[in-house]
Amino acid sequence: MPELPEVEIIRRGLEKKLINHTIQSVQRHRINLRQSIPITLETCLANTRIIKFNRRGKYILMELSNGLTVLFHLGMSGKIIVQPSGSGYEKQKHEHLTILTYEGECLQFIDPRRFGIIDLFPTNTTHNLLKMMGPEPLPDTGINVSSHQAILCDYLHEKFKLKKQSIKNTMLDQRVIAGLGNIYVCESLFLAGISPFQSACELKRQEILLLIQSIQSILLKAIESGGSSMRDYVHSNGEKGYFQMQWNVYGKEGELCNYCLQKGRKTVIKRAVQAGRSSFYCEICQK
Ligand SMILES: [Zn+2]
Image (cartoon, rainbow, N blue to C red):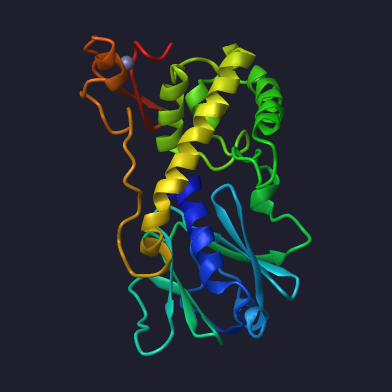
């Protein structure tokens, strides 16, 4: 499932290719994904200009000049491709929405498993799916990093106090913090030296601050390394879904922990299932 960095890379790709384009036509190829695709999409979007692409958690928000915003969620297997609408354009398998612009680009929303969402809402309102969402883990451009970390830390400290469940499951809850999925939660907990089984309410402020710093460093690294694979999402029809990141624990069950190795210890990375999702961890590095 695409997580925050993947979605942010897609957002940047869309911005680069489609900003200020005017929509010529919209074709809805099916009536529903996880929920129904609005029937008004085709008429509401025609002849409007795309003025902005925002991201909130794992959602992409395409803001239009007519006061409406299109919400996209990629679900489990969705992707968005942008390519010239000239002679090379071909409808793809599992393509559920096509948007053509007068400037000659074609946006294709493709989702084989159909867990994605396409919706439309007034820009000056908050979409229902975004109402309960926790804060973004990364600061907006221009915001001071350490003051953002301090504010987020205060917020999470308060929020965690009420959570007796594990920190792993707490961080996956989009109402607590936005945009994180299994991979980045496993890796952030490893980097912060926190066990996935630790109760969220037991974490001290200093540990939460370290966790925030770990989350931010991994997300930023992933976004940076994703720049080169952006074409896989928005310029071509490539199948590759994830960046070539080097993980410390994710998917490494049975392998030796590199941090332990550097200290002369041979510790095997373990896997456990929490709330139906795999947690990967080193029981020496994470307490
Ligand atoms: Zn270790």
